[in-house]
Image 1 (cartoon, one colour):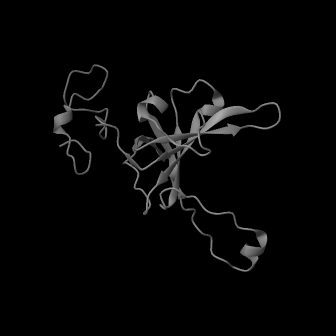
Image 2: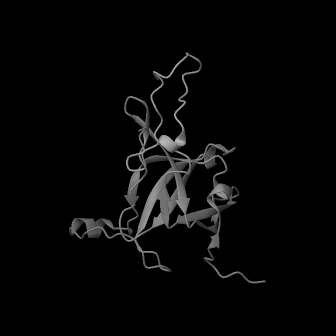
Image 3: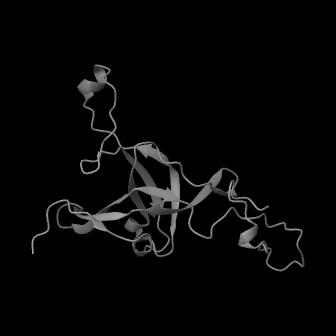
Length: 170
């Protein structure tokens, strides 16, 4: 059996991120290499285009809570889209620290060799066609809820009371 070089295999989000993913930072353009000479001449930086789809490439860094190896806790996913993808709303867990639960659509994985010398291993290039807020996730309600009886402080707002336009409780 021969598998062509660069073959992309469809993969479900839940297979790659069984406990979900958390977006770190912002969406950034994947740019082509620019030599020192090109920079000195003031040539503009060009964004990379996927050779299979012809769409622009955008990089998203994702934290994988299910990763067991330290090297696998942070993963880059390339989103293929004509325009910059808009990430889901984040949750501010502390002043200035925003966490964004994220789910990718149309994921593919392509095997690649990672590492150097005798420390090589099999890795994957992850691509997606879009991103969204995970199903069942909305913006959390504040812990100081006026609903009740102390307890753990968890919100008792049912998910059907979530406003779909801004993700906040109605």
